[in-house]
Structure formats: structure tokens, C-alpha cells
Length: 270
Image (cartoon, rainbow, N blue to C red; front, top):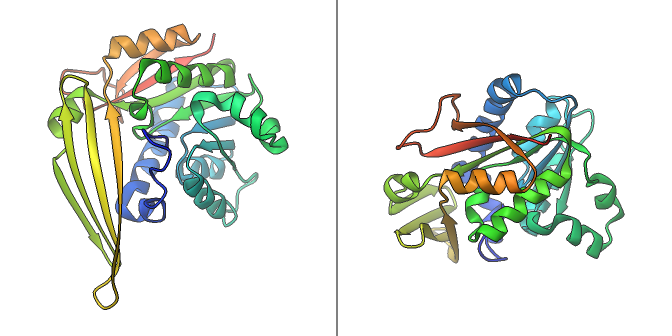
């Protein structure tokens, strides 16, 4: 998952799945396969998962018979995803590539990855996904637009782009100011603050790794998410060359409302 700084999700990556984040990917996979795709079908089974994190969604799609490539800018997250891919029994194991989804084609050309170049052909994918707050980490409209352009370039004609974003209502009113997660060997403390002028929520994540006998090692990361008006997102998706087919209150097929916490965007390349 991309972020405001290049080093987020580095120290936290080994604890990401264990702290409950893996549940979201499994939930979204069920939503995608059970609700979205039956209503918005695609012709093939080639998928690109942008900001794939530790690869849970990509692995579930691969298990369902999809040919999947996952991309994430975090080297630590990609390393975990690649390790997990080696243990799955899929027809074709998903590929995981370290790159920034805003400049996907430029980065893969620069680093000269032959495998990446083959796996990331323009106009190749039937489905592109970008989930779990990843687009909220784009703090400018220019960066958000760049992600939509990447999705549009990756998609084959009639291919589908599916993404989710937190709403301002959620970041401002529903995201708690303090959260503490404890499990054996790890303690996580999140403190969040919403700035109404910038529509940004800043979360300071502090983790403690170790035990009571030998002590704990502390690390800290800062995560910033920005909320965008739905009208802005619709406009940017359209400017990238995609047509919005649906805007859902996420995990349902209902329209969004004033208190919608997360929006699912469904757009097609015509």
C-alpha cells in the first residue's frame, strides 16, 4: 500500500496481517467475486492489483483461477507477498513487483526488470483493483489522477477498474482518535487527528515488539489519508479515460449516502 512517505509499512509490514488487516482483503475479495463482477462482468481473468500490500487479495484471486500481478511500492510488503505466493497451490502463482502505482510504466522501464515488463503490458488486464485506503494515501489530485491513468493504461478494452476510498465522513467522525491493539509479542498504539481544512487524517502508529522478559523494541510510522469529494473522484476517473459504471456504499450494492464510510468505485475502459 502506498503512503505519504517511502518508509511507511517498512517496520510494520511483519505485523500487518496479524493485526487484523488481512480480514479486509478477504472481505473485499468476497465482495468483488460475489457482488461486483456478477453485476459488472469482464471477458477474461487477468488481474492487476495496485497497492497489493502483503498480497492477500491477489492470492485469493489466483486461487479462484485468475492470472494475477500485484504491485506495491513497499519492498517489505512485496517480500512478504512473494514468500506467501510460494506456499500456495494455484494454477499460476501471482507475480509481485515492487513499483509505485503512480509511475508504474516509468519505474519498471527504469529498473529494467524483464519479468516486470512482460507482466505489466499496457492494455493487457481485464481487471484492475486498488483497495483498502490506498487511494486515500494520494494526498494531491495530481497523484490520484496518476493512479487512475495507470489503471486505464493497464486495462484492455472493456476492462474493469474496481477501487475503494474512505469518505470524509468516516475520517472525520468514525475513525477513533486512539486505538490500542495487543497480541503476544506486539503492542500497537494508533493516535489519529483529522484536519477539516485539508480533509486529511494523520495517524501516528507506534509499535512495540518483544516481551516482558527481554524488553520491547519501539518503532513509529506516520500515515496520512485524504478524503476527496465523490464529484472530484468521478471527474478524475473520467479524465483518465474510464467510464464510471457504479458508485456503491462499499460492501453493498446500494447508493452512497451522507453517512457512507467507504465508497466502492466501478469504472470501465470503453
